[in-house]
Image 1: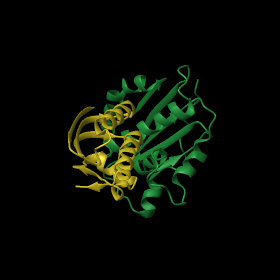
Image 2: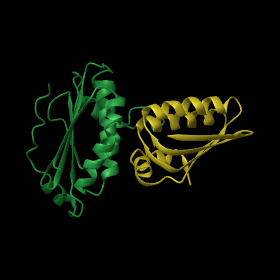
Image 3: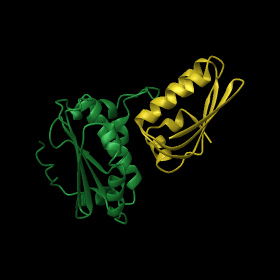
Image 4: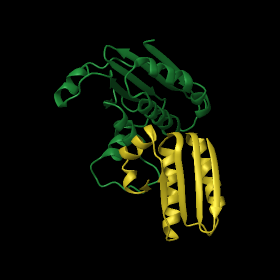
Length: 156
Length: 100
């Protein structure tokens, strides 16, 4: 299975799809399925609560596609907030308050994947993982991630 | 997620198993605070059978940590494993909590 697309309007709808999402991840054999799922969960929460502001009429779309040695994961909400700004706030170089009770979602997402970007401003978070067994070094890592990120596609 | 809470004097033991998603974290926080009452200042949380935690769950653990710290106590986390352990390292919370 090289592609999976799901849409959710709430945590309940997302949790009903968890088994299928985990199954898709396990088929990719990337060696970090659990951490990828952690990242997806954080991104979906971010999209539901902050992007769509828990509006039950709005969708969060999860799209996963395998392209060569990379797995691309897009999480797309219908909000107008700029995820990139929030990302920079949460992961910036200023000293962070470790005892803050929230605000570590993007830190977790960044740590669980190999590459994070915002291909469409404000609404999409993208993650890419390498296939298990690929040698990772400083430059080798960068070379294996394609320079051209596939388009996440229009959302309805 | 399944939760088992036991209080003895000023100490409480919590055994967590399964998956702690957002709703589970919120529920655990309510139950733990209620059980802690005014007397519990030391919390031992056994996480060997917890298979998943997210930032919401970590926020709850931090809130319990602060509660205990205000009372002069501590929180000890036991048996962090797999992705739960990884996420604690990523967020550097393994530097805040006592981990065994």
